[in-house]
Length: 443
Ligand SMILES: [Zn+2]
Image (cartoon, rainbow, N blue to C red):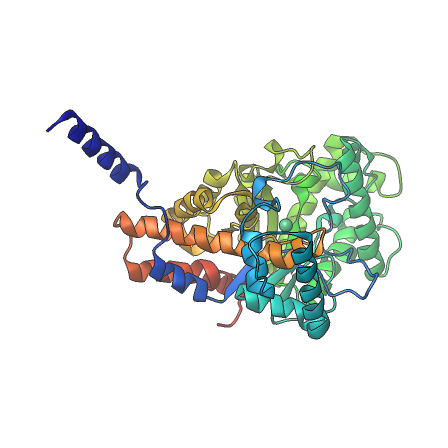
């Protein structure tokens, strides 16, 4: 063999070993993946508003009012998937973004919105081939009716019944976030027929926590959501009921608890809420991994901090969904946690933070561990202009997610880990079956 032939053979071997030869997903498999009408496990889909009206309910803790931070490249306007989105949604005919063409796009979108009225969100779902979308919102609204849209309300507000100053003063973002939670708690108190928190912890649980979850269930919720990682570390420690009762009784009517006392109370409250959710058949969604804002505490959002909750025998009836799969830094931790019988995950958010290639590595890892626990999700959210709003953003994210799933399954097939038939089966599980089973939805 000549030196050159040796070199070429060497490269060939390296490619075979690392899988670099796989540059695109298997076309037949991709076709099947695109055909599956999906369940989107997590979104902040906006309601249909009247002219001049604002939707303030799409997130308990919206990121928009925070000090600005840079968007990751995937969600910047130069992602070519946005052009594709406009073509698929509104028949956009161009490969450029001249002001004239964008004006035409806006006009077309406005016309579709006008024609579709309250049906507009469902019209978008059809374009994205999403059959059912979980809507993580403070409240539902026009255009977001079941069975296409299922409610996931927020319950962090139930964790903050005392004076929040010691937690809220940690940084400017938390100050804003706690003001939102306090507003939401007022709403929950009012709906529970109270105008202040009761004097004892037992009464608070019986008269506020449990009735709030029961109302949410009755209103159609399939899960409840915690964004606790925006407010504190996810390390909900071993509960000490007596201590919590004492701290609650001491500060319910006024005064400022020390941070440690407050966190210890939350350790108990979090479990009370999760237990009530399990009893009512509501899954518990928890934000894990990267979050918005320049002060976000990434160390505090590691899903492994939830160990004592996930390992609590009294919470085994509660199904926990680690939203975003510990997005970015904690995907590996998530893979292991899926081994617990009541733990699930989705790759929402990761599909607008990572490229299809990078996300495929995460998905493949999870599928090689516990494929029946992995779900598709987008985390789509309202944008700040008509051409980059939730519909186009959702298209961009859903395409990225499906492409990544295709890449992951193609790699597994090419490496002889799974047959083509199993790859198709896994695609159906991730895009639909796993979520349908978890939430008890009909096929
Ligand atoms: Zn979200």
